[in-house]
Length: 383
Ligand SMILES: Cc1ncc(COP(=O)(O)O)c(C=O)c1O
Image 1 (cartoon, rainbow, N blue to C red):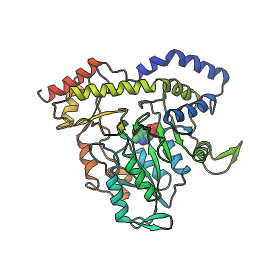
Image 2: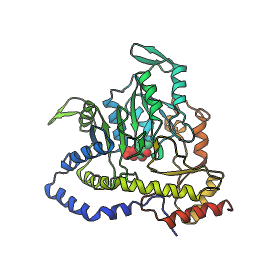
Image 3: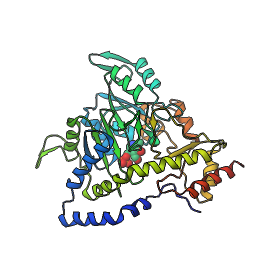
Image 4: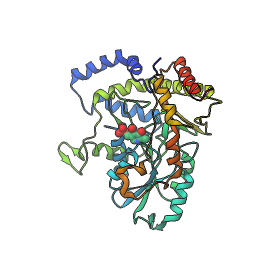
């Protein structure tokens, strides 16, 4: 049996018929950019997440970068984020001209550890007017950028409290968590702004690339709309430098059709995760935990265990697609060497990165595929 790590074809098959009809309409109108589908999608997705406004962009990276800029974060500022994420998170802070300070994660959530954020602020920052200045870097600490990793929300209650006490903005990186909930609130509607990716393997995905910024502050999304189109405020009037970061109409059609399925697809992911968790009991693996108040949408089902690389090879030999998200934490990436982090700077995420393994997970995964994967794991450990 072959079990891929993700299967996006099945999603395409579900929307195929309607998709081609809707695409035909777009081609007939030749309204390929900033059209009615993109505008409708902005409203529909914002409403799905319980946020007031949306500005669709070209990618999750574009969403992070433009959201940071729209929140007024730039060269004099720094942002506390995590290293244990896809590289685009700290990268976007640097692309905005600001400095990322990366803190460690907690276990078992693998998300930003609020204790580490507090400890960093206590050890390094002094109050200056309304803001905190980081004595170590000379920058103003402006925002927190937590990542709802693998589909699991961060502890937004504690992070929200820290942000309030220290006059910090919160930008949520929701690239992996469309529809996840923290204490009943959908992520993306909790912070000052949020950034989503619609990269083709995400829970809600384009047939290519896409992203969106959500906010309850219309000024933020209006600023993103300006920045996504070369800082344009009227036809060929450019108020500031911006980017070409628009979501095209064909992808907006895909996203609108898939959005109608998202809740059901997320439920399937949760059911598959429960089945994995039941069947993997008694193995040496550490499994994703149920954490109070946090509802994961299982973008990925990530386990941890002994002899990770050998286990991965064993499963691959059985035709089971597995991966590691992510093998090198961002603070140890060559591109960020000048930030001064070293091996040992963030011990929890460095240890976790050596042990994690992503198992196959997609809404159309069949029970026999889950059972085959689990049997592969059991046979590796001689169970
Ligand atoms: C946590 C996280 N942040 C940001 C991004 C960047 O999104 P994109 O690939 O759409 O630019 C990704 C996606 O891969 C991600 O997983």
